[in-house]
Length: 174
Image (cartoon, one colour):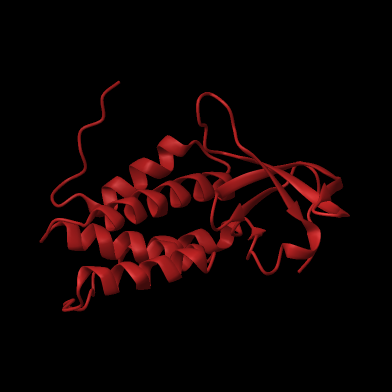
């Protein structure tokens, strides 16, 4: 996997979208390791969590570059594909499958998770775990696609909402 640069925005499957703020040696265990210092896009208590990721752990943690703008349309196509097979799996089997897709780090698989859960939500209540994955997939899609398209998150949110509105898109208020 190619190396990242300071200032680059990446996707860390467990934590979501993050910016590389530094590359420096850090003491981890008994050794000094070269680490990417990542600042996540998710705020907790008005602070952004900082992650120290050893450079040699990037691949095993599936950290990747933001999807290329030219691939955003493929993500949108996945969201628009309503050919959801009738799901007869139990909620916990579905949940495990969705967790694996989210851990893969693929935005395309995250789009599948979001789409499937969105459609499932129309016919039955989601379990607590499924709701959490639903929110995680939605947040990842909104943040990553806004970075890829160099646009505001609200624009991506409107696009996604329009795809999943049953009738017509909600009237915009200004």
